Length: 438
Image (cartoon, rainbow, N blue to C red):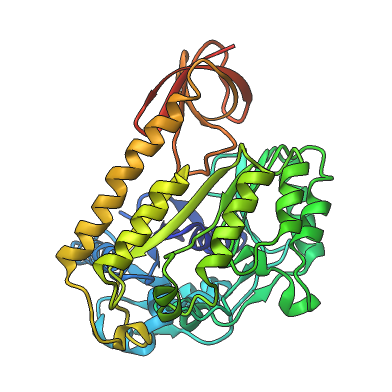
């Protein structure tokens, strides 16, 4: 049986897609990249905000068109969209043959087998599957880096967020399982692991009754073949001095702090139910700049949250201008049903949201250009992600996460994917750098 999988959304979704591919490969299915001509096509969907839902639905209906033309037999909608909307979604999409929730990715083979004996298969439950080191998996990333999901779900319950509804409560994987998984990855050539969950800094609290991220990191840095360990999604409520000192002292841990603050005004933070105050965020950033002055500090912000005044937006804008984050992303608030924020009075018009986002991003572009210009003339270590031609490749420094941050265009001989090169930086263009292999 020929199957194809289209993955949408974040890196956490990507891991789910890799696991589904692993189960299908183990079952003997032939994995194809192009859904055309396949027996089954799967869309692993995202349903976090409006734009993500629209992209998911558009992708599904592009497959429906293939099916109508006889170029595809069956369609499965998997992941967050069916997990969030359940059987209601199935009733609205008669053209789709199967629905598989984000918590049921281990049931992908069972779902596929049922497609050809049932009119429509709906496999959406509260199973909340959590994978282990020996779970079948086929990596979709290049052979030198991978994502490792250390937990799933979330306990933070921010007022705007649907993740707890989709993914359930926070559930940590056992430390031993994570270490075994990373060790196997390193043995087969993985040089960089990116640790992910909805809140990596909360890792272990549910099963060990204490924050256990530091203990996990101390075990991972002992894996000799591993070169880089990157932490993504650190909540300002849970990131602490102990972890910052570990990042500072361990050469293998990337000097990259991913700290989504969302806002800096206390009233906004309270309405968002972030459970952290501005003073805590400011103190944490001050500690980061003092302890790890070379660190790239990444954040995300939400503008246009209900009731956000011009003065409160100005406070956020001026804070971003003062801190000069190395990496920054801005979301316009998306009112999601069944969230408390969607019921708040004072919803902000879309044009104002977009205006506020664009204002911060214009400023941020100038900040990044200035910071990148400071690298010109310096030698930096670059991990080569892709060779474009015999004399040109693209890569990343430790200050850039895959897919979301800037690139380094490297010129030179004998450039190989997955190799680390010393690069003399010669120029910067917007968010990217260029340089020559030393």
